[in-house]
Amino acid sequence: MSRLVVISNRVADPRKTAAGGLAVALAEVLSNTGGLWFGWSGKIVPEGANEALHTQQAGPVKLATVDLTQADHDAYYLGYSNGVLWPVFHYRLDLADFDAGYIAGYRRVNQQFARKLLPLLRPDDILWVHDYHLIPLAAELRALGCKQRIGFFLHIPLPPPLMLAAIPGHDWLVRALFAYDLVGFQSKADLGHFAGYVETEAHAQPVEPGRWRAFGRTVQAGAFPIGIDVDEFQALTRAPEGAEMYQRMKNEYSRRKLLVGVDRLDYSKGLPHRMRAFRELLAKNPETRNSATLIQIASPSREDVSAYNDILHELESLCGSINGNFGELDWMPVRYMHRTVARARLPGLYRASRVALVTPLRDGMNLVAKEFIAAQDEADPGVLVLSRFAGAAEQMREAMLVNPYDTEGTAAGIMMALQMPLEERRNRHQALLQTLRRYDVHWWCDGFLQALDSAQAEEAGTSWL
Ligand code: ADP
Image (cartoon, rainbow, N blue to C red; front, top):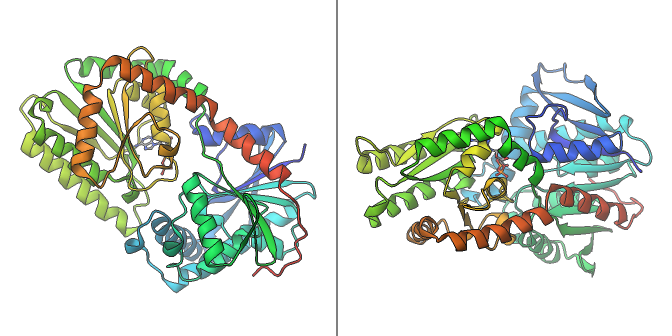
């Protein structure tokens, strides 16, 4: 079996149990092949001190990391990755900051990664590059002579062709994707956007289903919706911390129905829209007052990008006004916390909740939706209210699907979820859990790697950059 080399912006130590499902799944395949995981160390060092390569053996897996200078971090990570690609790929052109310096930094860091990774590679390695930070990595590696098979998976959505075309240098970005042997997306919608873009903007020819020719090379692309490790998450639910959290929440909310939202505080998650829908629910359905409580946990994220501060203030002001207008001496409608909850406690919280609100305006997949279903009590399960704009909605058809832009419609969906009879809750949950089990994170990992393994190899006789 070939050695697997995973490259991602951040590297997780697979021996640390706090790592989520993705890190666990990647660690498993990396361990099986005695693999290598390469990425940024998370450290910022002075100019000129960024040449070191840090290596560490983590069980059978080798970790190799590099540092970034402040200028590289600002341009590559904050600037281009999170100030251009993240907003545009989540359909927020209005939030993108197309500073010309950012793309130079993005390219510089990808070149650095390629230069430092190349000497670590063996001829029969298989490389798997993750996410929007590293789109041009294969092109940079090919330019240095790398012939190994390379796959790429985009964890976030790909926007429709015309929106993608708003990015200065978009053709460079898409051309870079053709340096991979396989490109994976989260959903069929994203794959459709890729096909639409390459056929209209790059005049690519589909050579066979799932395969396009452009820039003198063919690339294979497919939808590989990511899943969770259902068994691992259910084990967490039964573990002492999960069970204790569940009991605590059940006792605290014995007379009230609990609604839960768990997100990174990101503008793509539709948190203000969610709060407006909850306010509408309370306003239109007086019986929900005093009988429903929403716990919203929003973990701090990318606080050095200004759009994230705006969303924080908007959310806090909405929570305050809902509590101010509807709260009673012995009941507050919203319990809002701006923090991260320990992973071991999440399943208990999910299981004690009657309804989960997962209502992003756009999301590559959304794993909270899947975790919530995995954590439920099969005999008395809660209901998932899910935005149709989450990648997860393509698979999770039995959820209560809503349009988060439609405040009244979302409020009505939440009301239906709160009132849903036990039998319907069970039927929907059973179907959702079955899909979750069939398409779990191992299915995703194995499916992508098998497709990469059989992707038609081609000589890289092209000038890439
Ligand atoms: P994203 O990758 O955009 O943050 P996902 O829903 O795909 O969104 O994945 C989020 C992961 O982070 C999930 O595993 C979820 O449990 C975890 N998470 C999100 N918000 C919190 C929070 N406030 N506290 C603890 N864990 C969180």
